[in-house]
Image (tube, rainbow, N blue to C red; front, side, top):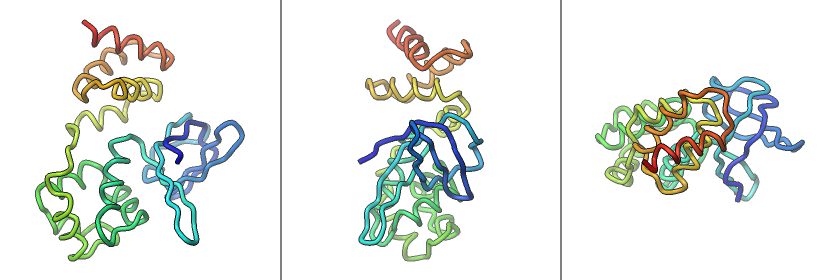
Length: 192
């Protein structure tokens, strides 16, 4: 399985992005094409969906967003395209808020979700979605790719979301560094 793809945005459309990774172009369904520009370096966390007639890549800005997608497609009757449309239309925070508060009406407003599906989502997922604080998710999207990659590295080393967010603020005080340099700054800050 392809866990993530890092490369340059070669082209994009309304709901997909083509990422050039060392001369190989990956077309990925992506909910945030409004946030990409041509020739931008990007890291896309991916889920590969294989069906009888198709092999597709679905991409996400963060591992948290990918985890939410995986939870959504675990709900009976909810496929990857519908889950992707939900993320594109509503976003991470809104979906988690609707599920955790049992807001079936908000879920029904999302594309491809009827009353039965909305109720099933709440039944299956309420209480199982542990969201990072909404502000930390939004803030991480504002950081340059090198800092976001360093944040992922810190998370992979076992640091908690609030620790990673604090480290990211310190990293952001030194613009223009590489991912490795930001990772060193973050580790120094967290080891105090």
